[in-house]
Image (cartoon, rainbow, N blue to C red; front, side):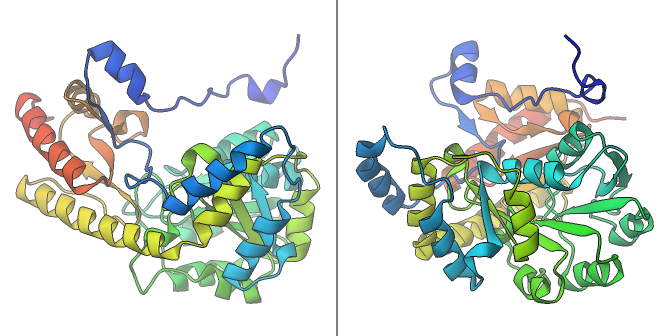
Length: 366
């Protein structure tokens, strides 16, 4: 058997340690996972009620076009249904965009230290990946623009950026769009947009009115608390959405995901409450990091990267043994940092107490 030569070097995605595995391996009764930027407050009660009602339809195929959910989301954002496309998480939408637009030899531009699925899917399509380094842990959009050539098909921007949590402003994104050739698609990944509390954050829908070469990515996995449902979507110009739709697999989102998404988007009070509680949690964590003399990147999502001045793997292991799963920077090319999902008040306080104990035992890097 001969696989595609351009994929043999690709790593298989390694998810964070699941709670059940950590409990079993370490003999712990309670484990708190603050590694995957999940919503610690779960999902709207309306979602659970909708899923219970949907149980009787398990034998039926889903609506392949997700018509009801598409109409609800389009209405919510004030766009037309033909501007919306759903995937099994925004991960699949990224895959479909790469499949629809990239052929071998095409170029695509992104940043270093960002969401890995942009690069992964570009390499699957045998495209040439050009990466600009972060500047102060933030996307350097002018440097990315400098990498655009006549062969460039797609530019990817994650805002706020995963894993750093930093953001670029509306003015910076608009300047990038103004300078990009109209033939180049800008994919603006807004997975954590609902958490942002900054007047400088970009308005993707406003930009979309003037730039048809822009596509926005959204997800129900984060603030809506539907990570297990795998449901995300793109918003774009009808022609762009049509092109992506041409490579979409039939029945790519389940009945349960569609029902959950419909119930979730109709409960914006839940979203507002989660945003406020996340901001409270971020404030607590940053104040505690200040008290401990630890620096951190500005955080605009529901997670924060903190500098430990110690080997990240040692701190990760120490926290794991105390029942806290975080994302070790040694896996993200930040060898002395960890990424922490903002949890509930009790989870945040427990994490800080555990971190303080671990830091006392792990020597600083000289």
